[in-house]
Length: 129
Image (cartoon, rainbow, N blue to C red; front, side):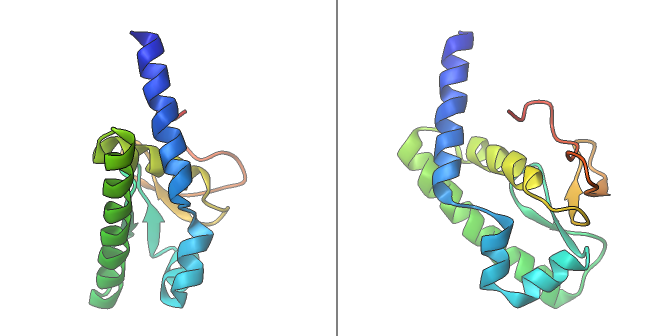
């Protein structure tokens, strides 16, 4: 049973890696996203989606929603190709995206609080591999 779970986790990780998600890729696509990320107005979440830190303007919420729609579409496509669920791919991506945050960037901890990445590793869900 453990071996099957390990193989499935490896397949999910490979599928997520194939999506090419990275903070830098999103930042290169939209300067408003890069500015919001640098200002600590948005951050990565364990569920694989971007979150607004605090209230945020209507424009910022619309930007985050648009990015999250793109992410969900990518997760859905990869899930269909890999046999994993969308939620599994999103969670694995969330683990990776939080790991990829740079010092000074925001991310949501497993207990739901927003944290600012320091020089060490971010606090991630214990299920992250």
